[in-house]
Amino acid sequence: MGKKKVKIQTGTLIKNKPKVKLRKKKAGSFPIQGRAYVTSSFNNTLINLTDNKGNTLLWGSTGTVGFKGTRKATPFAASTAALKVAEQAFGDGMREIQVFVKGPGVGRESAIRALKSAGLSIISIADVTPIPHNGCRPKKRRRV
Image (cartoon, rainbow, N blue to C red):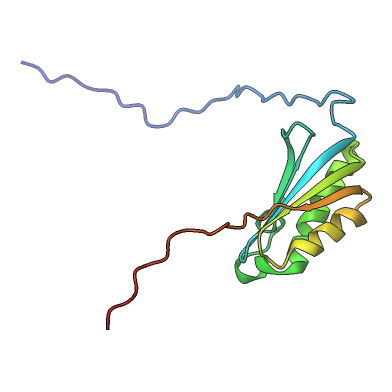
C-alpha cells in the first residue's frame, strides 16, 4: 500500500479583488427637520440624530471623537462630539432640531450649546430622564 500525498494550500493571493461600490446619497433625502437625542451618563455622552419618525441618521459619542477614560465624562468632550455630529447634519441639509435630553451627566448643557453653535436652530428642549414613581422595593433591613 502506497502513501497518498496530500497537497495543502496555505495562502492564496487574490489579484483581482472586487471593489466595493459606495452608494451616493440621493439629493434631498436628508430631512430639514429632525430630532437630537442626547444621552448623558456619568462616564459618557451619546448624541443620536434622527428624522421625525425616529430613524437614526447620524450618531456620535465622546469615544468616537477620540476621548478615552475619565476625559469622556467631561463637558468639553460632550460639546466636541455634539459639534461633530451637528456639523455633519448641517452639511447634509438639516436646519431645525428638537432636542431630547436624558441622564444625569455633566455633558447635557454643553452638548445642547454645541448643537446650537453648529448652526442648527433648536425648536424645543425636553428632559426625558426616567424618574421612578415609588421605585423598586427596598432591601430587607440589615440584621445586627
